Image (cartoon, rainbow, N blue to C red; front, side):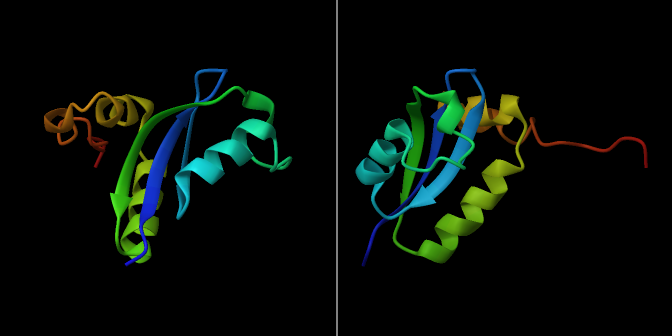
Length: 97
């Protein structure tokens, strides 16, 4: 089975970028070299890979990428730091309802 990766990059402006790829090394090279001039990361180089996880099912990887993109900065930092127990408590809650 082909491996897929969901990854989080820390940009030079301290923002985060989340993506999915089947070749993490190649994608990192392309991001850092400016291969994608219209990409969010182009003007935010240099970039640092701060998190990645592997999947054997690309559909699951894409679903996880979409999920992480919706997360708050604090929740992304919890997963980056390996604080998985905090993720449940960092879920966004709407108390106005």
